[in-house]
Amino acid sequence: MSVTVLLLQFDQKNNIFSVPLPSTLILSGKTLIMANSKYEYVRHFELADHMLPNTWLVVRIDGRGFHRFSQTHNFAKPNDRRAIDLMNRCAIEVMKDIKDIILAYGQSDEYSFIIPKTSNLYSRRSSKISSTIVSLFASNYVMHWTKYFGQDKLQYAPCFDSRTVCYPNDKVLRDYLSWRQADCHINNLFNTTFWALVQSGMTEDAAEKHLRGSFSKDKNEILFTQFNINYNKIEPVYRKGSTIIRQKTEVTSISPRNGEEVKRIKLIPTAIHDDIIGQEFWDVHPELLAEK
Image (cartoon, rainbow, N blue to C red):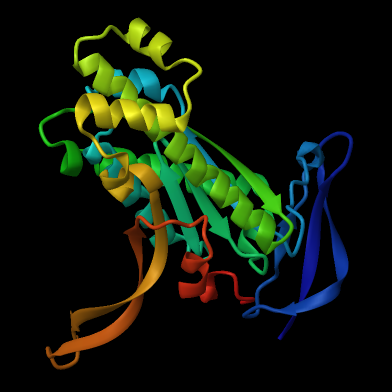
């Protein structure tokens, strides 16, 4: 059945009148009505924020005011494994929800989510992608807090900012990820040395002055000679951050038809703590940069 499409419009006195459109639609014998009020012009003030096609999209979220947040919630220094595991859990939940994300990398209070060049997620609208990912992450942070912090109650809501950046090719994307992992190493080496000095009796101001202008080799020497700490033997999760990829995993479920166990292979977002600066990681996971 053909039906007439009507466009509802308003005159200057706000009286409604209809204008038939030339096209017809098959719609269960009903007339399709499209409202077009005099107020709809405000939509033209919205910015077109579609990201460039055929480019990698990276959404990076950062904790806002997390220095105060970590102090309020008594995070262990230099690293609190509970906080790291919670951040990883949030990123995993984001990847479960948004299938277009192929990889995520996180350290400290930040996480980067990688979306492939071929993705048309939300028509590649920057605001839509950023807001969806950061809101999913923040809500999961609150929802899963108790699992990781137990009786330590959440004192106030955490906040994260977010941005979406496009990168033109595989090399630039890898350079971006290398930059974030190098930042993880630099910050963790400083924090490990700084808090070792403070926990040995030095004031925070004195420890900061002591390390000012020092190089990596200087910090490594302080850790080894004064505290018998071999930095290279510290857990990789602290030195290299967390990379989440979709790994093939055997899962068992119960068939609703016959109640029997069914085993199948699924791609499950999983946190690993590998070096992603070198070539080996990318050789082991060639699918990450492969054209989809």
